[in-house]
Length: 249
Image (tube, rainbow, N blue to C red; front, side, top):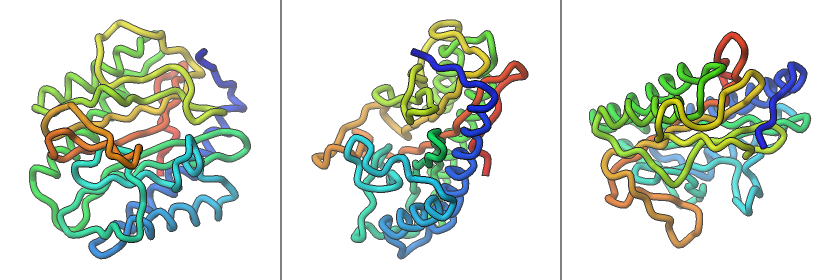
């Protein structure tokens, strides 16, 4: 069931999203050669706690950390580890959120570690811009399919694979609410977009094939062909005046 938020609930979500965006910012700023993904996770955890909030990924479905930190060909759900040390040329996707006063925020971005290849920069740029295209399509009276088509058409035009198995989602009192927000589909189809809806829109885009696999740890998702993947996400409110990004840093 899709839950429409009141103006009071949106104000509470804005605070959760402000903290989520701040945590993503400090985590991204920590990305550098020689740091471990565990250290980045600790930075995000400490920031969220300092704001009086809780890291909403920690313990969710059994996930053991504050942030999902995924490197290079890892699409999502990478588990932070003291032994995972970043090196120059890596691209690092960080996905995290915060919960405060009963409401959630959720956001993600892919960061360059040192000097990265032109191919990696292009993938990141296209994925980031596909999120912008999706948000532009998130207007009241539209359909979920408009968001999905905006991502798919933009990324496939640039020759990239659009992950099918994982999607964005509604968000509010629960981190994952209805509706599902896929990154592929047909414009004009799906759930109608209404003022008060809050969506986590998150393109997951692969340099090569759209196909993915899950590692034996049960969490980490990788591209099937070993090529790079990028991930960007914002929590967005649908309002009568159009989409509003809640997870602005």
